[in-house]
View: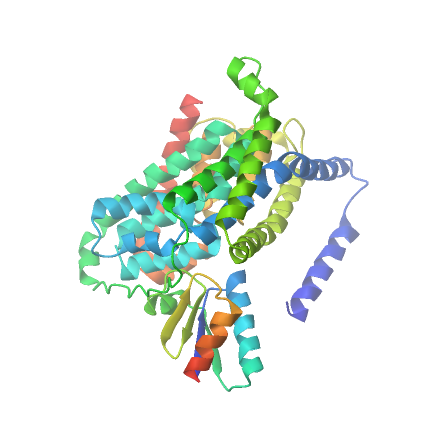
Amino acid sequence: MNQKYKFLIIFGVFTFFYFIPFNNLAVPQPMVESLLMAQEYAREHVLLCLIPAFFIAGAIANFISQENVIKYFGAKTNKFISYSIASISGTILAVCSCTVLPLFAGIYKRGAGIGPATAFLYSGPAINILAIILTARVLGFELGIARAIGAIIFSIIIGLLMHFIFYKDEQKIQTRQASVADTSSEKEGRTLKKIIFYFATMIGILVFANWGQDDSIEIWQMIYNFKWLITGILLVILIWMLIKWFSKEELIHWTNSSWDFALQILPLLLGGVLVAGLLLGRPGSEGLIPKIWIENLVGGNSLWSNLFASVVGALMYFATLTEIPILQGLLGAGMNKGPALALLLAGPALSLPNMLVIRSIIGTKKTIVFIVLVITMATFSGMLFGYFF
Amino acid sequence: MKIEILGTGCPKCKKLSELTQAIVQELGISAEIKKVTDINKIIDYGVMITPALVIDGEIKAVGKIPSKQEMTEWIKKKK
């Protein structure tokens, strides 16, 4: 970090504290809200949910060969397969948000073309494993699933539309096949079966450690009573697997990449939680922004509310996962679930800074069409979701 | 020798360039280390996942930071 940045940060922080109007009654309460929301995350979400999720993300980055997925993005691959892979591979490939744009550019220029490329761009950030886990955990199961399924289905539709709109343009572009450098020198040490068991165990730990109480369903409640026992058994199995199947070096790599994810994401998430708490308050209380504004803008499930949420989502930049506390605040302040989904779908896929990068790759015209499609699709799926839930 | 590091500026890319610099210094060789951050140029190398390491035009690693040992060997071989 250079000196100028450091100066600006220090200057900003102190100016902020200099001017906080504590005497104004509207201010102290939101600041307390912001801290309470951070406490809620620390108690409810970080230890049991995010930390296992970081380890899963680290395992994906380390033990699943990304080259194997990328080969389906080539120009010669069957179109049906390349669309399907493009729409779901974000789970594996987009764990780090910095890989999304290079992959998008790569698929567009060197591989399967604009359709699969835009499909990947739309679904990738929305369905990365950390985003789905935290969405389901914080915002509720339906919204988590709706986000994943919505992103996958609509990414294919957007991809196909982009392909048909620019069909002629595309043929002029001479697609040079990427020379997929075969750098995977390491031999596969484990069988697929072992990898599947390994991931299943980790996901099991995540699911059972977070099992919620519910009196109405007997079996649900029974699992709840035994959840620590089940989690403990799974943990023992996982440790056994780690000792038997993995070398020491692999384990160090795994821990390192999990740590990298935590390091990248936790500070941003904390910032997001504090800001969301300050501006919006926790559910049931009010932050700096009056509830009535939010209710007026996105309280219903009208076309206007959904469109507004999509446009705001598309323009705003959300650092990885920060969209979740912000939405939690908004939902608590009276936002309808429809616009919430619209914002979740349009948000991570687009932001002003990444629109500029996308434009440098595919040109102005295609970028505009893509943005319009994303906003339309997000609005539409938000309305549909809001109608049913 | 020319060593290029392809990456749009994510934390891993920075780590890779630090590691490269350290190795070059350790070996005491003269090498030009160049960072390629423009996405369109990165794609022209045929690389889709960053960071990537290119030594004298040859792609050595994609999407991960190679171990120090591996990198030292590659650089020594090219010398």
